[in-house]
Image (tube, rainbow, N blue to C red; front, side, top):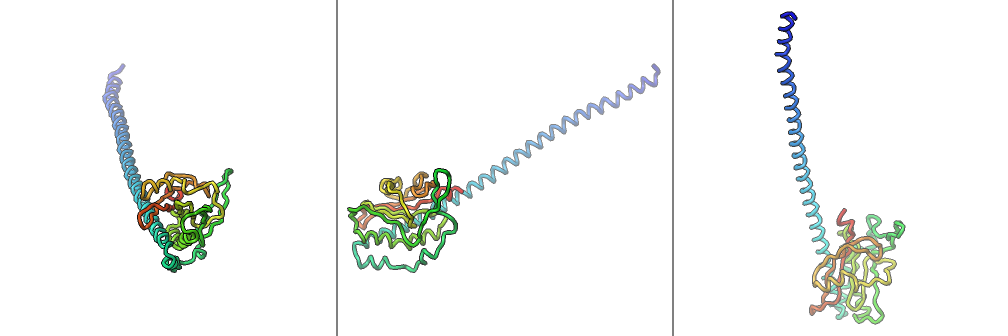
Amino acid sequence: MRIRWKLLILLLSLSLVPILVIRWSDQRSMSKMGDDLATITRNVLIQKASMELRILVEEHSRVLRRERELIEMALRVQASELEKRFASAHHPNSFRFIAKSNGTEPAARTKPRRLKYFRVMGNGRYVPLNVSYENLSYRSPPDIRFGGNEGKQAMSSMVPVYHSIVSEHPDLVFWQLTALEDGAESVYPKVGRIPMRYSSLHANWYVQAQKEAGIVWTRPSRDPCTVRLVFTVAAPLNSSVGKFIGATAIAVPVSARLQ
């Protein structure tokens, strides 16, 4: 082999080998840098997503806390007004004054914003319920001890108060319930039919309100009229001498709290 070919091969070796080595090294460096950038980007995105999710959860927590406070405040007003009326039921003159219209707009003029009351049938079909914001459903045992018609009047006079509360919080307030130790009970708004087997005196919200002597929240349960899941927030009712005479409650749809 001639010397010029040998020199050519030598020069090519001296020039190509470093180029290949550098190329291989660059590829490794670029690959490592790409992996590092991907790791950094992933960590940044995860951190950002975690921060945004935490902020979102904290905002929802504040909203839920505010709604809880609104419901409990409305329930306190409801319980206070009921206690005033039951105390006045023993004094006909003062009761008639309390039972007068307080200027609240008639419930009949206020229409529900959307279909709110319906019963879920076994086949999944929705059947609308006939409800009336003008009155409440009332029932009592034949041997009722509390004031008879006066007790019924006391409950009926709560319609403007109930209506005012549900108008302020239409999505949160579903039913407004009241039950007394003597078996009298009411449901607002008035519904066409309450299951005969249902008794508020045996409901969890009534038992817990009597036991805890304060505002209580029940676990989600089936509403007897609509078969929908509801939370029930209850408060005890006491006489002027501090004796337990019953309980009142607000039923809140689970969907409204967790939507």
